[in-house]
Image (tube, rainbow, N blue to C red):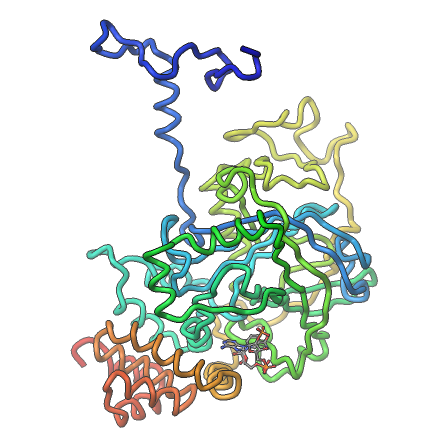
Amino acid sequence: MSDSKKLTTAFGIPVGDDQNSMTAGSRGPALMQDAHLMEKLAHFDRERIPERVVHAKGAGAGGYFEVTVDVTKYTKAKFLSKVGKKTEVFARFSTVGGEKGSADSARDPRGFAVKFYTEDGNYDFVGNNTPVFFIRDPLKFADFIHTQKRHPATNCPDPDMFWDFLSLTPESIHQVTVLFSDRGTPATFRNMNGYSSHTYKWYNKKGEYFWVQYHFKTDQGIKNLTRKQATRLAGENPDHATKDLYDAIERGEYPSWTLQMQIMTPEQAKDYRFDIFDITKVWPHSDFPLIEVGRLVLNRNPKNYFAEVEQAAFGPGNLVPGIAASPDKMLQARIFSYHDTHIHRLGPNYHLIPVNSPKAAPEKSYQRDGFMRVDDNGGSGSNYWPNSAGGPAPDPDSLEPPFDVSGQAARQAYAHPNDDFVQAGNLYRDVMTDVDRDHLIGNITSHLKGAKKRIQLRQTAIFYKADPDYGSHVAKELDLNIKKVEKLAAMSPEDRAKATAQGA
Ligand code: NDP
């Protein structure tokens, strides 16, 4: 047998027999000196790494991004510097709330993450298939996610806690309306858009900056599942979207998305009618039309799911020169939280895992040591800065231009809370068709009917505030007293909460 075909232990020692444990006598007991058996069992015992607390179930693929339109007047990002320029990428799509084995067809936002291996290091786009989010302050995030997961006593998903939180958090109405439309159950990962949801900043070589929102529009067209189709697939083929992505790429049908941007000048932002950093709002297309930038193509399946997809780690803080954060409070918190969770999940040296390491710009930092430091750990070079040994030095050209901040340091809410119902109402009235509205009401009521009456009433008042027709249809399907719904809709959030509290 040639050496290359010989089975070895993890340490390269030849294995003579991989079917029979070493025993004392043919019936055992087994001997502890069987190091091969011990190694195999011990490694197997540690095969699972911590599951992502959100976005646990996902699929991924490699590919490239190609610039199709000159955007150098907006950004100096090198990977966007020339029409025709291609950058290698790795993308991961996911559901949010379900565990690693949960169904791809669950009603849930879908994660849409793309790692660009640029010559200025890795740029991570970490978006969703929805342009808005449920909450706009990160202090609420852990509570919100708890309500989407399992009840502490029953260990089952619980419509009471799901709707109790949302109905006490009226800014969620826009995202709830998107989620309970058929867009909440995309047919496949290929048939959905990806949005930054957050506002980001782009700045050019002259130091001029712009506020931007990203829209990756699917070239396969939007396709969604109905509630019935989604439920059936969850039983018959819970991995349908994972398999669809893999099979399409194997067939040579490479999915692609056109990147379009909304771009706002600082002057336009100053007096805009709502806060442009509020993630519960979109920027209307009529005010900020989409500008094409490039094309994302996925043409390579991972050779090994764990190596590339499970270990892939995206962070909204990985921004390259030309792209910067906005003041969006949710984004600011995500910049901490994603990196933190990856360190917990994969260890402090997760940047050395091939899918995460910068391919076009080798790491030259002074970070050293830690678990699984599997490269040469900086060799004999200096492990401090400043040094006079010619070690890597900071480059002032890569600094974000300074920017003004003002106001009092305090715990403060967004300034335009009265706008919370406007865009959900627009979506219901002006964008949805009769069929969309019919499906929306059915999708909502089949879920909300599981909650207590008082919670149904409170949430239906929120739908009513977005649009009286919307609230009335939900009330009718749930057999709720419309007068009570109208009365609750007219109350302040605090009074509505009191009027529908337990025992009220
Ligand atoms: P437009 O009429 O220009 O845009 C409406 C957009 O709604 C479409 O372009 C499409 O976005 C999206 N859409 C279509 N059907 C549905 C559906 N069933 N569920 C969710 N979204 C759908 O109007 P505006 O820009 O003024 O926005 C009106 C409303 O449309 C917003 O309040 C928001 O709810 C929704 N919307 C707006 C987006 C934006 O960035 N302006 C993005 C997505 C939704 P797409 O082309 O991205 O598929």
